[in-house]
Each structure stands twice: as structure tokens, then as C-alpha cells.
Image 1 (cartoon, rainbow over the protein chains, first blue to last red):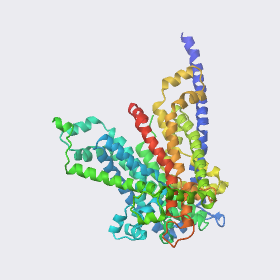
Image 2: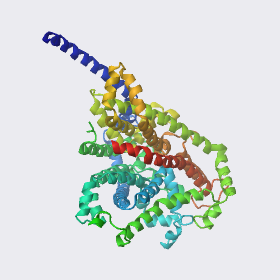
Image 3: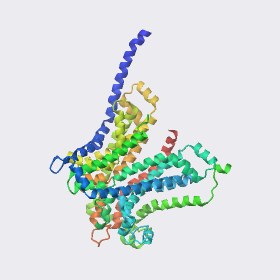
Image 4: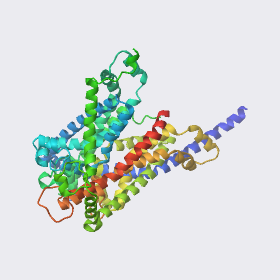
Amino acid sequence: MSAIAATATPDRARAAKRKGRRDTRMAYLLLLPYIVLLIMFGVFPVAYAFGLSFVDTIENSFYGLANYDFVFNDFRVPAAAINVIWFVVIWVAMTMVGVATLSLMLDTVGRRTATTLRTIYFLPGAVTSSAVVVLWLFLLDPGVSPFQGLLHAAGWTYSIDVVSGLGLASVFALMAFFSASGGWIVVFGGALSSLPTEVLEAARIDGANRFQLATRIKLPMIWRSLVLMGILSFAAGLQLFVEPQLMGLAGPQSAQNDWSLNQMAFQYAFRMGDFGASAALSTMLVSTSIIIALVIVFATRFYKLD
Amino acid sequence: MADARTPPFRLNLGRFIVYAVLLFAVCFYGIPLLWLLLAGTRSQSSLFADPPFTIGTWDMFIATWNNLTTYNNFQIVSWAANSLIYSVGGVLLALVASIPAGYALAASEFPGRKLILVVTLIAMITPSTAVVLPIFLEMNLLGLNNSYAGLILASGFFPFGVYLTYVYFSTSLPKGVMDSARVDGANRFELFTRIALPLARPIVALVAFFSFIGIWSNYFLAFVLLSDDKLYNLPVGLTVLISTSGALSNLPANDVPIKKPEVILAAILVILPVLLIFIVAQRFVRSGTLSGAEKG
């Protein structure tokens, strides 16, 4: 018996090794199309932009940090940075407070009512990109807006009054919140309904009312997810482009062509033909996003599934 | 304490506030959408003169529809066709790339697996808008700017789909079934096509759903990559329609037939497919996927 075992073991080990190798080859084969796309549209563009940011693309020579220098010395860039930060602060605050409040409130009403309301909140998610800006240009125009009563009451006659009254950062935050928050409310509806019932039951028996239940028990339990939503919104908000870029549709007097950082990167490439400067600004924007992503991935151990 | 378990319905201040806030939110989310859908049936003068929620007439709608579709030699129709081409091509590519990749990451162990997973997560969390200009610079180098292929390839890259598939197979692939199929002599590729793919129907639908929404409504990438107006998709076309006609600026009238009603109808065309998919998916989610999630 021991002799058989002795001869069988190396055989089995070799077979296992061969099987492992074949498994590996199969895995790479299945991954191949995705890896090609990942390199083409994830890794390579970022690396290429990084390399390009050190090149004088007009003279085609090594440029050192001159592109970065140029970007930092363009007075529009710090102004755009301040604009974007205002937008992000308003939008993230709106999203965190709005989504948490509405989700917790929906969790206290009847199931059928909650489902219907959640659907209504969620549908504007279909209005994205250019359509959301076009819709809001109508909503902010006191001449045609369904909210014209409200706008007239505030003393605004033309859309330009509304925009300057609210401030561009708030207008863009409203557009983004209108379209993006409903999806989160659905996500948090699911999260709240899967909270352990024993804990909620125990708190109820201890005499907690609905308000205490929401603020002292449920809110702390979804807090981590709320923060994650805030960070994801922050990262997306820094890349703002479409909303300010399309303000000009309301007429030349409303155009905002260098309001955000991504617009500046666009201006460098498309208006000035300076790809190096565009690459330098893009590299800084992408690096910020990647750093945020790394923090999320390693702080939440996202990849730890198995 | 019996009534503490199921609090009786009382209209106190707290409940009043809850319902007031929820109702306010219904107005905030619902009114714009309702207004837009109704406004698509109204004429330019009705938009200014009548109350906001007036329903237009069939004749007004048909007139608007004709103005919009025939404008510039049926330009909006070709933009809609382009949108369809980009979306179908992009969704198919996203599926072909992400379903096998997610399966491989979940079902096997190989060198480099963790690296691919982490890079995928980073790519998924990084907003796609952050790489639009780098992708433009790259496409400029490759000469793929301004082509169907360029935009379809770029929209087929969908790391979120890989992540969803990976999570799905990690949690739902029955190890026993896989092992017995292997014993029965199925090779590795057959394991994927015969066992994993049939199980993958819900995840294929989910990845198609999310990637379609992203690609159909993509403005920034299409705007940057495409410079020939014959290649525009609907979201870019919508803005071109407005900027060439000046329909949204209250400037002196011109003889371009694109006025506010036509713009509204074009905007409805942009959002309608996603809106319909949302409504269909809503029922799908309530009936099927939720019960699966409870078991999982």
C-alpha cells in the first residue's frame, strides 16, 4: 500500500500542477478581451497623458515641468478650482443630507407608499448628461418654468436673474442632485430594509420613538455607506464638465466656458491646441481621482470577497 | 407594551413633517419630468401663455414632430441611429469583455489575479469623466478619433460590469456542480459556456442595463471624440440643435424651424429609452431579483 502511495503522490502532484497551469491559461484567455480594453482605455491613456505633460507638444521637445508651471500661472485655473470646490461642497452636502433624510423617512411609512415614492424619486435618473442641463434651463426660465410662481415670487423675471440669484455652483448642484440622488435613495432603501430586525425591535421595546430609532439606531448603522457615497460624489464632482459647458445654450450671455477644471483642460486642447498643458491638467485631475479610489479600495477592503 | 411594537397611526407633528418632506420631494423630482412630457405636446406660444401643466393638441404635437424630424435632411433620425449603433456595439463589447473576465476572476486562482482586481476597482471608482481628455489624446495618437469604432471601443470598457460579474459568480457559483461537470470530462471552456453562462442570465441583464444607460447618455466622451456632425449621438445632437437654432436664448426670432417645443421633443427622445428601461426594470427588480437577494 505504501509503495502505491509513494508512486501515486508525485504523479498526482504533477497532474495537479498541469491542471493548475491549464486553469491559469484558460483564465488569461477569458480575461484577454477585458485586459486589452483595460490597457487601452484605463492604463495607457493615463500613462500617455502623464508622459505628454512633460512635453512641449507644439515644439515637440522635452519641456520639464513647464506645462505644470503654465497651468498654475493661468489665472483662470485657481478660479476654476474655487468654483469646483464650491460646487462639490454644496452637492455633497445636499446629497448626504437629502439622501439620508429621504431614505430614513421612507423607511417609516407604509411599504407600498415607500415603493411608489422611491420610483418617483428614481425616474429623474433617466435625465442625464445634456438632457438634464436642457431641462433645467427650461425650469430656471421664469417665462416657461413649471416653478414660475416660485421664481416670480423671488422677484426673478429672466433666467439670468435666477442663475445669478442662486449662484452657478448651486444651479449645477441642483442639476446633479436631481438626476443622481434617486438611485442612491433606492440603494439605501435596500440597505435599511436589511438591517437586523432584532436590534430595531430591542430599541423599540426600550421605548425609542420613530425619530430616535432613525437618528440613534438606523443612521449610525448606515453611516459608513453614507460616507462612501459622499466620497464617490466628491470624486465625480471634481470632474464637472457638462453642466457649465452647456450653460451657453441659454444664450451667449450665459456661457461659462472656463468655469470648471475639466473645461480648462478641454480649452487647452481644443481652443489653444496645447495638448501638453491639457495633459498636465488632466494628469492632476486623474491623479486626484486615483488617490481617492485607492483610499476607498484599501480602507474598505473592497476586494476581500473570498 | 403591546402597542409599542406596532405604533398606532397618529397624525402628530412628527408624521406631519415626514409626509410634508416626502411630498416636497415628490414635487422636486416629479414636476420637472411631468412638465417635460406634457410640454412636448405644446406649441411655442402655448408654452409662454398657458399655465405650466396645459396639455397641447395632437396637431401641435404633429407639427413639432415634423419640424424636428425633417430639419436638416432628417438629421435627428441619423443621430438617433448613431446612438443606437454606439449603444448596441458598446453594450455587446462590454458583455463580451466583462462576463468572461468576471467569471475568470471568481472561478480560478492565477498569478496577477489580485492586481487585476485592484486595478479594476480603481478604474471603476475613478469617474469616467476623469479619463475623457487622456482618451482623446490617445485616440488622436492612434487616429481613431471621429469614428464609430473609436467611440464603441472606448464605451466597451466597463470595469463596473467586471466587478458585478465577479461578485455574482463568487457568491452564486455552485462548487459541487462545477466539480461534477469537471469529473464528467467537461473542459475548462465548456465549464464556462455550459455551466457558468446559463447561470449568468441575470448578471448579463444587469451589466447590459448599466452599460446601456451609461453609453446611451454619454455626452462628454462623444463630444470630445467626434467632430463630424454625421457621427454625433443624440445627447450631442440635442445641444447642436439648440446652439445652431438659438432656440433657448430669448433672442429675436429667426426662421429656423427649431423652437422650444422641438427642443423639448428632442430632449424627450434622449431620455425616453432610459426612462422606459427604468420602468420595465422596476417591475423586474420587484418580482425576481429581490427574492434571489434574500436567499443569497
